[in-house]
Image (cartoon, rainbow, N blue to C red; front, side):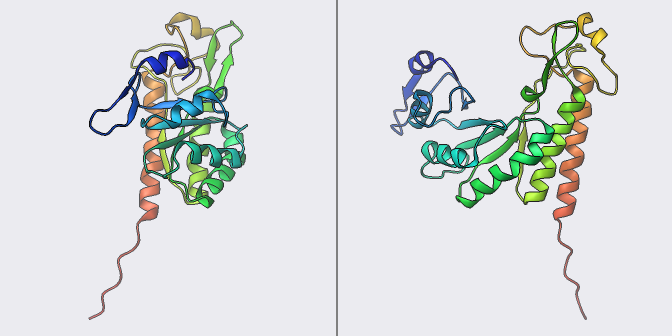
Length: 225
């Protein structure tokens, strides 16, 4: 959310509740350039009732995150705030635990979501913008590992993907190389996972969720006769 006049023009008051909603989207978010605590974007979002996302990179200070959540969700309403972390696998393992601990220590209720796409964009030797499947997968695994370690809940994963057989991200079981990029590079914006890469990553996520569910089961108490 960058252009405030556009967002303001699409904001309406709900006649039944008296609350204001920005009708440009269901969920709005602020990122590195727009999440200043005393900035106009945060002030605007504070006044609308939409669910809100906060993008957090490795530059996010834990105390700043707590203050920002308090401004945007002073009543600590569940479902209001989603923290979207995007910082690369290694930074995720180092930085995310401090964010989780700070938010938990403040008693704040948020949903944690991983965005493994935007922190892993690189420029290929041919000049095209691309992403490494291995880096994306590593960040997803780090996201789950940290939440397992901290006893918190991985609430979601944001992916940019297509069902088409494009060649925009390198790697995957059906290896896409740098030399392959130009053959089916159809995106007009960011590189997307193709159908095969998306399925491969989906199985990785499904395995982690299944293992987490199995690990959380408590054995039934024994019955003595």
